[in-house]
Image 1 (cartoon, rainbow, N blue to C red):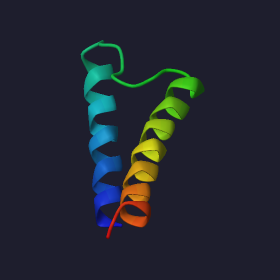
Image 2: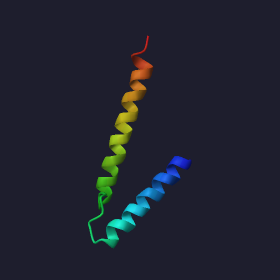
Image 3: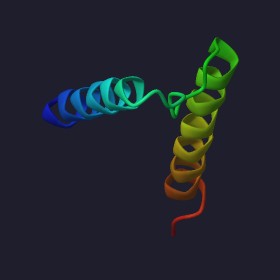
Image 4: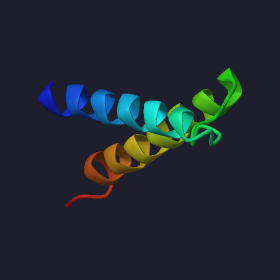
Length: 57
């Protein structure tokens, strides 16, 4: 849980910093971009799950 809160805080600070110096935010601006990131994470997790459940002796 601490890692999640630190990640959220880091993201918040980066958002504030980028806005303060008038740069575009380094994140997808729309829901489809966020869903793409979630999909990448789920794909990686599914691959790791498949390796441990199907391909271990």
